[in-house]
Structure formats: structure tokens, C-alpha cells
Length: 106
Image 1 (cartoon, one colour):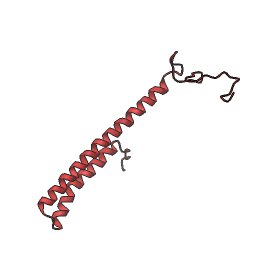
Image 2 (tube, rainbow, N blue to C red):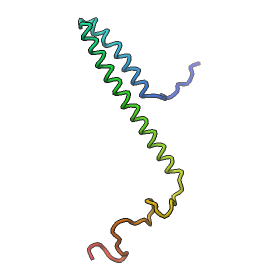
Image 3 (cartoon, rainbow, N blue to C red):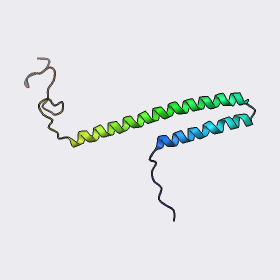
């Protein structure tokens, strides 16, 4: 019997693992096809730098997404009446106030 597969818990980690694998595989392929060891080493360093930068950006993106989700969840949990200085609500008016019977063209 096959165990149920879990959904990916760390998609950024999967991307980084594949990138690290390619950092190891690409130089081997380059050397096999005639590139010098120095050229392969430079390619490896370049790939490692790009992989590290992508990892940082992916982690930052995940952190931002988690923070946004947390703020959204907190907003849903707070009561709709936030007090006197609330920004929310249909009754809050900021800026130009016009009496109900007059239009801006009057």
C-alpha cells in the first residue's frame, strides 16, 4: 500500500535543491564536452551566486506572503467597531463634506 503524498510544504526549498543540483551537474557536463576546468569553475561560481540570490528573494517573498496572511487574519478577527478614530465604516467622512441635498455642481 502506498502512503498518501503530502502537499509540498516548502516549494522554495525544492527550487533551491534543484538549483544546487544543477550547480553540481553543469560543470561536469561542461568538462565532459571540452570546457576547461577553469571555465567550469567560473560557471559553477556564477550558478551558485544566482542560486543564492534566488533563494534570498524566494524566502523574502514567502515571509511577505505569510505576514500579509497574518494581517488579513487579524483584521478578520477584530470587531467591526474600532472606536472613534476608525478608518473603516460607512459613516466615516474625510475631506470635503457636502450637505445631502446639494451636488458639487450647485
